[in-house]
Image (cartoon, rainbow, N blue to C red):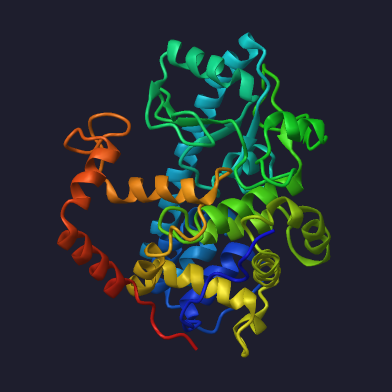
Length: 403
């Protein structure tokens, strides 16, 4: 069982007209009329939150121009064009991976953003994704990874506990082959593998209407699997690092997966045990309530007293707009790393990766070519430098007073 409740304590931020417009146009039905919008401010928030492609995909061009003005609307529409171009690159990458998987008889299942795109949950061109995440059987991951390299994909990152090194296709699309779905645990300690999900009948055939026609054995995760993984990814993995993955995209995924209202509450009863080690029931319930309020354009979300849903919204908002709060989150990254390893080992590895400078000469080395251990040993020999860095981090990381 998890030992934390609600880990986020953000300042209470004002519900400006621009924020209300962004939330409504990104998540709710399109019939809301606004007395005030603040077009430039609304467009800036949409861009910062990563919601511009989604808004452009859900609203007509005439509405955007009428509500934001031509210049601001053009910025919103441009972001959707960029997201669509990225979607095409990932589509081409998937075609290459699917061919290799078919030849090797390796089944696979999409995860995260592109799973919603392929499954028809997300609006076309409205779900930006940096890469293509695919879950494959553990015993066949290396063979597929090697075959993709043989076909010309280039290594574009390092290996992690949950995945092989990222690979870049000639189109520019990046694919990451996962051995587990981190944080989604059908058993008490181990994150789910492809085999575990398949054995529990949580993977099914692709829909007949799916735009991509696989030659290989593509399996689609069930809706509750995608929602559970979204919660683990959005709260446990990136909840304290909103710049790496804006929480507003995570909320969009929950809305698109219908994780809201009575149906969402029924799903929560099923998936809460799967994520309990890393996401508390209080946090998962706040996400459910927030997705429900956003989809309904429920104005009471901003009424006192501040609910768990509102605190979660303020957290994602402040994490992207309040530099002091964002800095305070960085000092908490070691609290509960998302990992199947013992927490002491997971924290040590994360600390090493955080303290070591950007690596340029290969995996596991610093910019000077040192290993993590060598660098940390050199830094440990300079205690005053360690004290100075620690004090600076604490001074910058003190969160503002919350109400």
